[in-house]
Amino acid sequence: MASNAAAVPFWRAAGMTYITYSNICANLVRNCLKEPYRSEAINREKVHFSVAKWVDGKPQKSNEDMALDSKWGLERGQCPGQEPNYIE
Image (cartoon, rainbow, N blue to C red; front, side, top):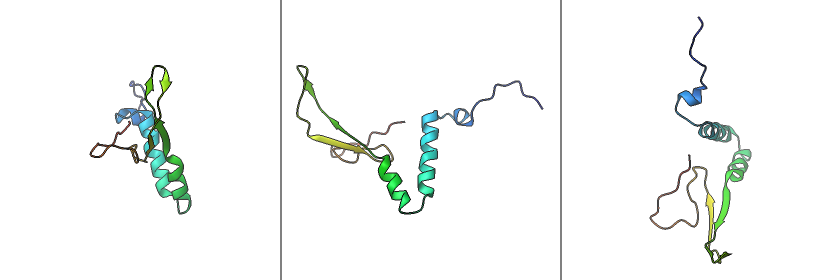
């Protein structure tokens, strides 16, 4: 049977972006690994960055180092009582 509807990727039909779909797939693959490969892959996934305020065109001394965990929530440098920032 032929269909007149345009083919749509299943991740798009599910209401996801490709980035969300690929992140889900990557997490599934990492979780299927055996140790020690699993912990190595999880450690490679972390993203570290620092935040600096700029005043008069010059960066001020930064006292915040942050790392994003596997759920994209702040791991360090997060204010107490602050909800994690999730990026989708």
